[in-house]
Amino acid sequence: MNEFPAFRAKNCSAEDAICFRIHDDLHQSGRFVALNGAVTMPIKQDEIIELLEKTPGVRDIKNGLTVLPVSPSDDRIRVVIANQIYRDPLFVNYSRVNPPIHVIVEHGHVTLIGIVTSQIDRQKAEAIAHMVPGVFSVDSQIRLASEVHGR
Image (tube, rainbow, N blue to C red):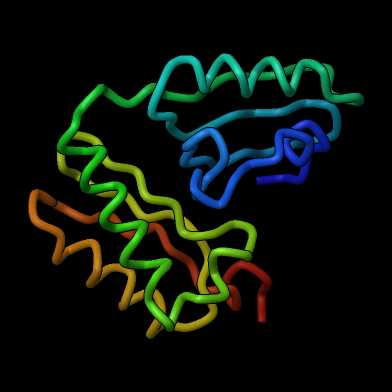
């Protein structure tokens, strides 16, 4: 997610894990912003759009965000996976990295999105997600930093 001043000004708490509880893939090209990803509540989608509309330099916003269905089971899965990943000593530094590993859950199907520094880290995140009760499938879209940065 690009660092827009409006998002920094929101002062997201550590308990939010991912501000707005968004599992995002935010792209910016000049003054055009394309929002892709998912949010857990419709009001969060509205807040993100409102913040971007107030951001200097942003001229056009294409909203491709999806609102995930309300599901206590999916919420539980999302929290368990995120807690297990970010409490694991292997991932202690990832909670401060942009982008961290995002966890999207829809009807028990998990998508992991993010960037890690090693294949071991990627495999560990995938294993954590697979072991959570109620998970039907895991789609790992976790990339290695070397793949992203061309090293």
